[in-house]
Image (tube, rainbow, N blue to C red; front, side):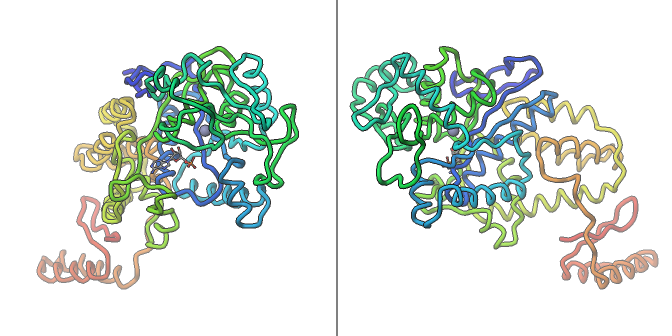
Length: 451
Ligand code: AMP
Ligand code: ZN
């Protein structure tokens, strides 16, 4: 079966066929390192990671780049508030991000690119856009992209072009704005006092880049002028990705990205989780409630990346119970690893190849666990195989140390069962339960695990 992905650009599920056979060039918009990302942000990175894992599972060589936005309106504003240099400030949140993605079992990309390391590349693209008459300098020395001059402006976000471009008067210097504010956007921002000591002296003058040019430059510098996949959350479709297309294609004259893929929102009380709404949680909030961040990954996998999910603690606790159950079932399979079951693998592949249908792929995992006609060793091999895509850490599970008291009760229970004293053995089972453990009778004998 061919792999199919939903492409935001064509608004269709398309058969995936990379530019170079067997290889995928893949760019993900990464975090703005000005604060701890909230768990809504992590949906974007878990989605990108799942996509990468599917491509690897399908045998592709994947070159994956993720940027770190370490200079923009927000990083400058908040570093000044904290009285720190931009570098010190962004480095702190970069390290926090690295720690978080580890706890979510996200495979690090080949490279994290920092925007501040690519200023020269940004300047070169802007110079090209000036030369191609797609950009102009304003009175204060800033450079803007002229959206009326770029024929395809709006093709990704589906703007009703002519009408909106006609209405689009003036220009916007802010990095972030909405569809009701379509204007010429800043490629290069001439220095002003608010920027303090954040500036570069370049051929364009003293200033700093706009946010959108950063990703065009980093993607082209690391992966080339044309790439296969570019990801981010749906709120990046406009203006960020629309502007990336305008800048990149305006400079090279070639299609920039073949497949644009976007994850939907995490909501709270049916509203987008966001810093500005102050309705957000971070991974630290999960840890404070003794919930392993990997549970959040599992919870997200239960929904397709293109559907909105409403975050409530009860749902996460439900996911925690289910994941613990899967872990226990996996531990019960023992340590022998047999052969991957090809029937189940076929079903699994069918689902993940259908635009990453992880909810249905998870049902196959449950089916394998429940299958009675498979040996434990083959089940184990199949589970570990699927986990290359899920990334839930089944290979690293450790048998829990069962407290002595529970072990003693379990031994006693085994004896009472041998003596066919079932009412006593039932009593002992209840005692074991009350201590937070459960006991199961399997073909290989009695198994004790955490409830
Ligand atoms: P930012 O650091 O604001 O650029 O956001 C980082 C990533 O998180 C982007 O890909 C956003 O589209 C994504 N994002 C932001 N808020 C949410 C949310 N509530 N649900 C899902 N993704 C989000
Ligand atoms: Zn970006």
